[in-house]
Image (cartoon, rainbow over all chains, first blue to last red; front, side):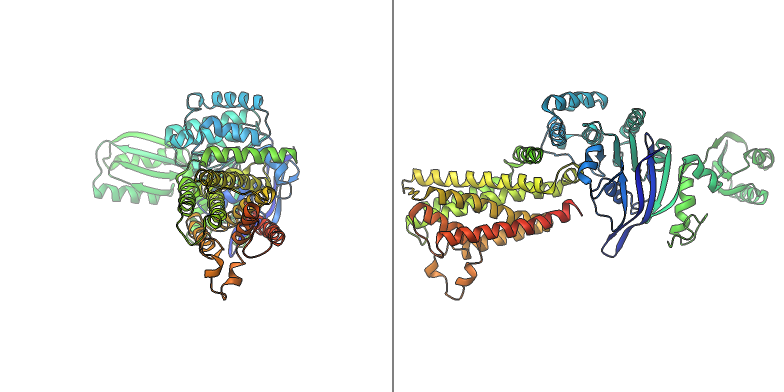
Length: 329
Length: 245
């Protein structure tokens, strides 16, 4: 399959700061490609480079075969962007904002009117069309931003932190919307520092750190190659004494089943790659210590763990599973 | 090209919708120059009436055109909505043209209001060379708009206000406007010629009353054109730093 977006050896320097250090990746038609990384990882710079809004210091970005910097005008006709911060005009109503963008994008008056109604319907914005953008809540502003990004029905959508600063309920509805848009065949690049969001929405994820590619792949692959286990949570019926907590910690450590252990007053948390063995061997011995088990939970590897597995060792100066080996970071 | 002009028109049109009643535009762009125009028109200051009127026109055009351009860019930088322009299929010259159109319109509004006041006060408006007057009004508005574009794209919004006011007030006092030529020390006079307001004012003088203070009208016209092309080049380069970093 032909890639829709090709990023080749992209370097972006701002004075002495190197925001992107030779980034390369490809995005294929119809996929949601997640850019995940902490603040300063280079996600927004990457989005801007794809949109042709900044000049690469080295390398290039091809969008539908066109160089995004040299042919930025043409490229922008095919993409819709939700910038990191709400950026429509506070002084105008949502309808005026959408009409303005539609006309700038070359839609005729009639077509602009039609599209405003269609996207307002899709995004449940109809009743807010005549409200001033500056008076909307953050969630509604984000929906209006998305409406502006899709007003011309683009093939490619670049979503930069679309749920940032939005309350969980609204964020969830925005995620549903992103899925809905993906089902219509749009190619989407989604930048997020919310691990769950990027991992759950994306078909592939690129983990970025300080402008460098850490690892790329399907979300499940990222978890698998890290060898992360499941989280077993044992809830006790009664609070544990300090003595019991100490003994339990010792017991789990000596069993060799768990990579991480946390024993609180009423919950024992262990991360293990061998859930069955842990439950068959360790749980009975915990009970033998007089602990009454109230409940038990087995959680799949959290994306928080995936993130910590890659990024945290790097931030602490180590190299975890060493995905950056040889990259000079 | 036609599409480019259509896009510039829409940016300009919506700028007016967004900003034309903003407080800084009303206070600096309309009320302040009108106060000066009235003060000059009712006989205060060092000039005779016919000397005051071109100065009033120049001040009205200077403040009206610079205020709208300043607000139309600074507000977008502050709110982040300038990002929309970064991501839309819009060329930088279309954005520049839209902003200059705003400055031009406000320049005409400023001059229209000043003209109305002077007409009402019955000081008489000669209009001996109406085309020269129109040339001065048009090129003057564009040059002042370009100076503002350069400043607001170059600097952050808050320092931009300070620098813009320094430029405007320096022109007011040293740019051949409030201080008449005979009162300017000869040693400073060459500096006065650096300000475009001198040539705009001289052309208003010539257009209305067939006289000038500093240079003959044709030289003024050429100098203003040089200003225009130089500022287009410099302001455009600075705009590109923001719009295509």
